[in-house]
Amino acid sequence: MESYLAIEFLNKLTLSIGFPLFFLLASALLPIIVCFTIVFGIVKQSKLYIQCAYQLMYLGVILTSIFVLILLLVTGIYYSDIQHFLPIYQYIFWVTCSIFYLGFIFQLICIVLWYRLIGSPILYILLSFLSGICYSSFIIISIFLFGYIFSGDFVALERETDFSIIVGLIFPSLTSPLWLIVFITHFIEAAAAAGIALVWLWIRRNKDNFGRDYYVVAANWCGVWAAYGAWIFLISFIVFMLYNVVISLIVIGWPIATVSVGLGLISALIWTKIALSNNPMRHKLSMIFAIVFFVYSMTFGSSVVFIQ
Image (cartoon, rainbow, N blue to C red; front, side):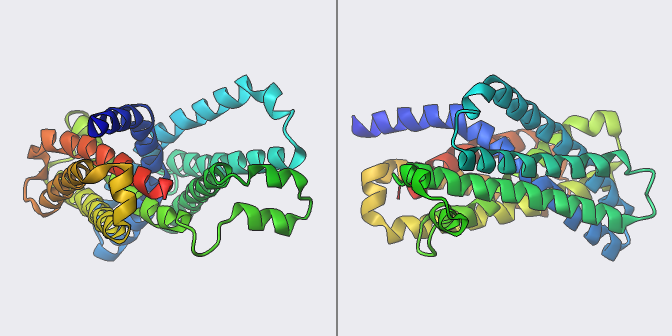
């Protein structure tokens, strides 16, 4: 009965938070993947990777635009409430939002000037890297803030005026499990970004039609990133559960933990197969199933780590 209730709760958590978070994390790392894709294309002297980088950046702009609109909408709706925050809370909120918007500006500049500055790949690398750094900083700061709010020390910030003390309160100690979440989040971002990119290649294939060679190269490349992220996340999650056996049993129980690991394993195997395939675009349904399975595995696993 308890396991059933836990599954029902985690299923609702996945549908309400897991999938939106998955797409947010995907949009955060896509500029970094674009950066590495351009560099790899220059090293390999292959225009296929440059074309792949453009498609990934285009996807990133679409995903990020959605979250920019959501953030602007939420800010507009709750603007009057935000004005009642203490000055330090307002400062943290606006700085965090500004970092996200700055990353979006870098990304927009990159996509708008893509074909006009085709002979300056270094500029593309710089813009995509700066965009990715802004998004990653936004994600990390958000993790620390949520961890701080749920730690029970939230009220303490109201009594502090020294900025160094405030930073010490918000940023966790080196022994905090939040650093583990930051570590795991990077690999979740990689799997999410590349997993969605594979589906994007499939969706755009009939319209773009860049040829079979391009889709083999692009899908293999995205498959490598997705598999890399999924395997590291899965290994980290298993190690954490074995290290915190009691916590794992109390929070979700071994049946749910086994399902979580199993779903993550299936996703990792699918993406590995795509990365090594000579005809990766034939695995269309597998690409979708890999995303769904990984979101459930990610939500279950992250819940255990965050509760700890």
